[in-house]
Image 1 (cartoon, one colour):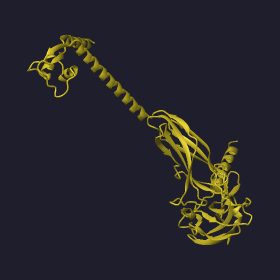
Image 2: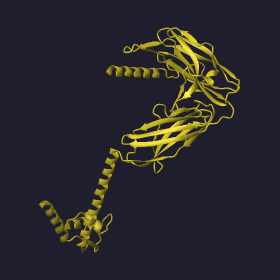
Image 3: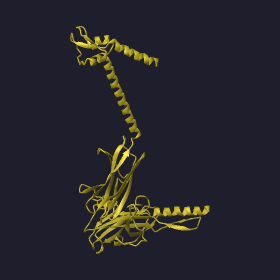
Image 4: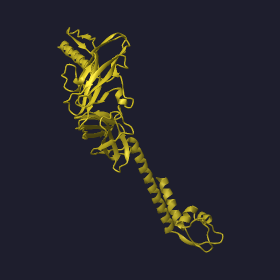
Length: 405
């Protein structure tokens, strides 16, 4: 039984490896020591054409171009070339169909001058191809891929079963062909969810494109206070928040952040999408761009203060309480001074300091008791309130009581 489970486990791992290895990736291998390819004639005004073939072609029009095939390995390689349709995954990510699948769209519009190239170690070769748009093709955008894979197969043998499976790596370069006509781009926010916990927030944003051309969308989630003051912005950590959204599909992206409002409170998370309204303007985000921003419905969120926020709040509360108690004590003392005060007519030799010393209070307290202001000069005959001995007796009793305690 244990041997059977081990066999099943090995097969599962092997199939997982196979699935990972056959996933296409544009320009992979060209810089990583394997085999690969890239666009031979990119448009210097459009950085995206360095990794994607981008064409705008009329019905019946043909476009000739070249694919640069590269061998960065240390041995001779036989590389097979092909053309397949593009496809979108469940999450909206763009990928390429397998060679065994039927070609139903623009993958069948490409004619390669050769489907196999033999390259020496470190070698390169330009391969010509032609893209021809059929007369009956639908107006709008069509996606496909040029694929490259080694003809040499590694054989992995399962020693437990004696079985084997051939593993092939594959690279692919996306191709976008746009046919002019009634082009539409209907971008919207299909779904937005926001959750938060003690470690941060998690956001899920789904964008939909119901048109017939792609858009490079910039997805963003903005967290603002109820007073509309921006607190911070959450963006895609790996790609800066910009993703391709192909026609007729949806794209879901997950965003996470550990940032939290220090003092907590009510906030709202608002999703937004930004894209260039110009058709076929892939990667040309410059001064000529005409951006449109779509904002979705906000989600209200309540945050508890962070530990630092709690510390600051407690410190402020303690400070306010201490200030209030200080004000109350000063008010009580002033009332006691005034309650038992006696009237005294100032003589020529009296000063605020001398009278305060006789009354055993500070001159500042005596000045406040009599509502005197700077320079605190007393006039002869001026009535001054002086604390009575009862006030000092009360103070002595309080001191004695505290000592006994």
